[in-house]
Amino acid sequence: MLRPNKDKSKKVKLTKESIQKAKGIFTYLKPYRGAYLIGWFFLILSTSAGLLFPFLMGQLLGGGSTSATPTSAADSVQLINLKNINTVAIVLFILFGVQSVFSYFRVVIFTNVTENALRDIRKSAFDKLIFMPMDFFNQNKVGELTSRISSDITQLQDTLKTTVAEFFRQVVIIAGGIVFLLFLSWKLALIMLATVPIMAIIAVFFGRFIRKLSKQAQDQAAESNSIIEESLMGIANVKSFTNEHFILRKYGKAIEEIRALNIKSGVWRGLFISFIIFCLFGAIVFIVWQGLLMTQGPNPELSSQSFFSFVMYTIMMGASIGSIPELYASIQKSIGATENLMDIINNPSEKQLLKGQLKPAILGNVEFLKAGFSYPQRSDISVLNGISFAAKSNETIALVGSSGSGKSTISSLLMNYYTLNSGNILFDGVDIQDIDVEYLRSQMAMVPQEVILFAGTIRENISFGKTEATEAEIIDAAQKANALEFINSFPEGLETQVGDRGIQLSGGQKQRIAIARAIIKNPTILILDEATSALDSESERLVQDALDKLMVGRTSFVIAHRLSTIKNADKILVIQNGNIIETGTHDELIKDNGVYNNLVELQGIELS
Ligand SMILES: Nc1ncnc2c1ncn2[C@@H]1O[C@H](COP(=O)(O)OP(=O)(O)OP(=O)(O)O)[C@@H](O)[C@H]1O
Ligand SMILES: [Mg+2]
Image 1: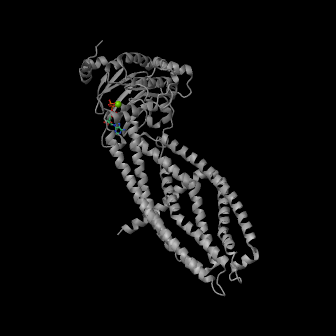
Image 2 (image 1 turned 180 degrees about the vertical axis):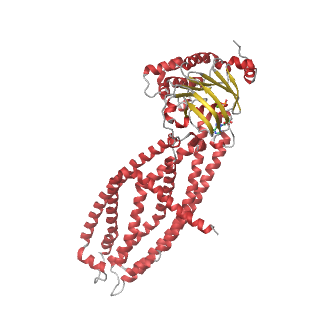
Image 3 (image 1 turned 30 degrees about the horizontal axis):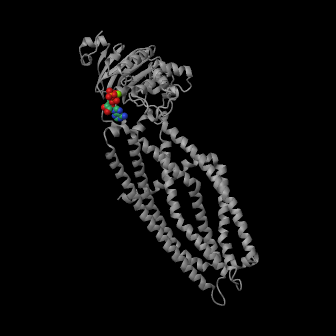
């Protein structure tokens, strides 16, 4: 019973939504509305000038044959104002001259406005993306996101620059054409108009269907792009597992679907166009035939000039009508594209979600109070089960535990990448939720488990930790991270390109650059997530020395599998399945003879 109503409300909702999205775009056009209006002014002028063209052309073509007496209002106009062929030709030349100037300004102004607005949209979109909460990136594939944004922007670019203007022009030509046709011969005009509404209805129906098909193809294309991007980003993995063929098959399947969808939409588009053409040419022949009949006889209903004008209008309108569905589909696509872009732009950023405003002095006292957490993507699996511990200023806290026990999660929570489900995290007594997130992160530095460097030089990658760092600071940081030696061994030193994602460096080199990046930031709280895991024992000893020095005077959280590196920690937390099962210093935990002691024995660490 509710179904028809539901359908109706869905339609209303769609238009409402469309209007809302269109509004979103207007906010980007607003700063340039002056220029935009001038562009529209030129568009209106050039379109109106264009409307005169078929009339004058008809007069020129029909001028050769002598018309007897004026038979319609239009003919008297012609007789009074345009006495001979020469005049008509000159007027036509002037008309084209004027129109070319108008069109030039129209195109230039529209391009200007569009490019300005698009720059702002691009900026807003990236601005939004980069400030998105971590969970957003868990939910969205980066490749899909970037290709979607770039294709949406291209779509919007075409529409703002040309499609909207073109659509307007065609609509004006059709409307103006109808007026001229009625003026020239209402009888013939009515015959001609009898075919238009039918075509219009079919055009709308078809257009909608084709739009749906091309949207599907677009989505599929984004998906196939993400296959390429992911496999190229992880190319080493693909090769080591010799999964090239597997991925090729997967990609092949995806592009096959794109092909099928696009061909399907092409067939429909073809049917559509041929239908329009048949109707159009059929109609033109029919009208020419009927019109010629009217010009015959001793007392013709229609002068030959008017007849030619009429035919010219008919052809022009036919072309306009034929182009409308394509333009309409393109505008519809743009509305879809705008919707996507606005979805991103209107998504709440991290700052909007995390409302903390306080900027308390952070000395490095950190406390977890019954902290319970599960990742939003997997809310049914509890990763931390209400853990409590405290780190005093300048202490070193080591987190030990098997893989997947929740150690990296704790460091992500310290960074406020995610929000606790229950309990609290306090920094110097202030709840993490009340602290300004950027301020909080500015007080911390993390050397992550998986170091990712940016394409650029080593210098750029180190100064990422402090964008205004001086040369001396960069060299000092590199030295403290025990990285200077290998940096200097490269011919280009600090200017060495690290390649996309740091691919041209070894794991240990990347790690030391990440450490230098953390050192240069001079944080109050330091998080080292397996910071030395990729180093050989000798380098590890050197880096460990550096880290030991670095940890002095700051609160440090050290996650390590190699227990030798954390022997001197003030407190060791042994974590298992999201619970802290043992707490104490190395010596205490050895004495307790529990899980930690087992681990130590397994690793055969010398007890000293
Ligand atoms: N982004 C994520 N979304 C959903 N679940 C996650 C996410 N990251 C980690 N997990 C899950 O949370 C649990 C804890 O992961 P975490 O990375 O904290 O382990 P870890 O102790 O650091 O392990 P490792 O020693 O291997 O680094 C794991 O079960 C993992 O599958
Ligand atoms: Mg981890």
